[in-house]
Image (cartoon, rainbow, N blue to C red; front, top):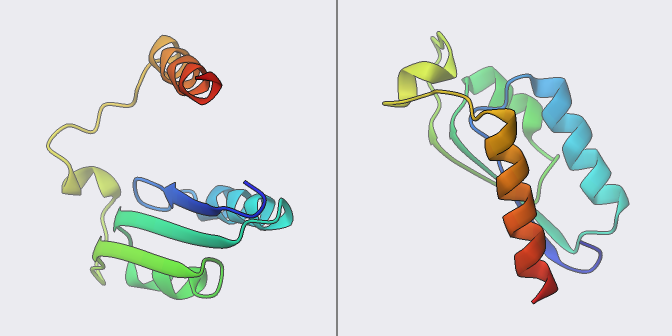
Length: 96
């Protein structure tokens, strides 16, 4: 990612410390620019994320936030085999 623009997409910035550590790790690796895209997040979370990314894009920022699952028709987490397959496909795409 050094010298490139990184686009980080998260389902809702939960848990926040995990996202913050990921953004910091990308920054240490020398990203040229970092974008953070969230479908929805609590307003307070968006304020906490200010300055962590060069651009912050979000669709919803309600004050009352009962969890990210309310913003999706299907919020079923992927299984470990699905994650492994997606990472393998992404890695195969980088090799070509």
